[in-house]
Image 1 (cartoon, rainbow, N blue to C red):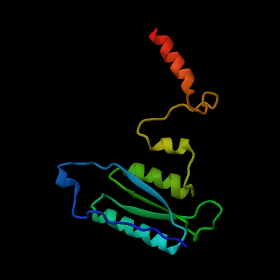
Image 2 (cartoon, rainbow, N blue to C red):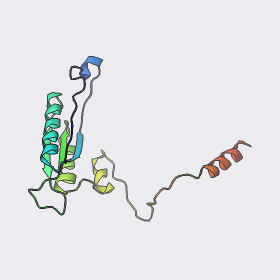
Image 3 (spheres, rainbow, N blue to C red):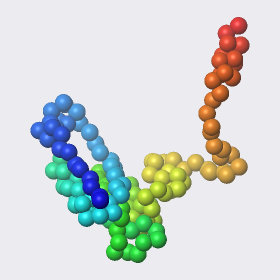
Length: 142
């Protein structure tokens, strides 16, 4: 059974009530919506975002790779004034038919940032050994 609940918490509170002014460039939510209940809930979420006066709220459904079109199991809801970024989000998720794109695809969403990705220089980080850190720190103190 699929279910998704959307709670409307304090609908009478608005950002303006706090004196804040936000300029939303782009906001996107990727949702797994395999059944009619979750699809309906995602539509309700998009409606709530529209009612909250987020600029240019769009809802797109897509079928992940391996499923035929017409069997949409994911939903992307995007909003914001930056049409270029919204277009990139659509291209990465909806056109690419993936809910978990490669990190290199997501780097397209960062303004003016395109680092050279050399596979030889990319390593996985496994964390610090706490004892080694303490030893190195204490040796520097002495």
